[in-house]
Length: 356
Image 1 (spheres, one colour):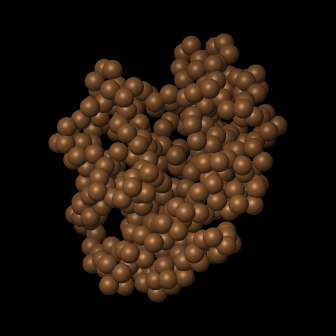
Image 2: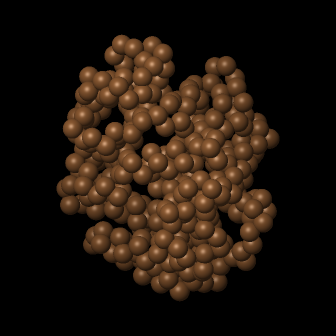
């Protein structure tokens, strides 16, 4: 598979340019090993932290910074994201190598950190161009990715020095209360209040099954594959929301993005990863595989699946709320209210199917 397309950054978006001289000066003082001025490109996205590729003759570096105008540091804490990866790297080798943290906002107007680029292919809504897999190879890719989630949840948080990220027992309850509160505050007239779903989650909220390092956004499009060996995972990206929490909540979050081949057209339109391909596990098979690999037992996964969907609905509603109140004019967000209502409908259907 020598012709597999590697993941690459594109042209920097208008209004999001870096001060190249300032960044270059800082890198040469604090990290070193590079010469000349870098060519700067930017990765797609931008709703979360902005991510750039700085290409020097010697190597490519990745720079992460918050969006311009960010006020809530807790949501875009560069220092926390940097320290989590640095502490986790010896225990979970697929974390990128972080090289330096700049907390002096006078350099570019915001904190940022720099890490090594993980060169490989990223599966998004479709497999990378040039990557052709039969059903057996696709299944092997699927289980290889799931195995990385299993391995993450087995990391010794105390040994890694990450136990302080946790707030003690009650993670699941805090998540339900927090996401429910965010949903209420982001409400608009054209979106259901979601009381049936929120009441179900509050009433059925279980005790935590464990407390471990969780990613909180574990998806195929945050995984870097070896182009010549797609079942070999080179990197796991985007540790912004990593914390200590319940591993089944982490799995529930991942399932919210897991679109199967026979899901309806609306669900297919939301697909961000190639979980529809022949050979991919179904959502039910994902749960069974994870529970077998970890030895964790749970009689009914409905709560965690509904939680993941509800959390996704809240995220979409928060984005739509900004569009509704003209805080952003991105036309891609115009119909997010329909998506939120649809996800809540899926939540209600899942609850009823389980006899909730």
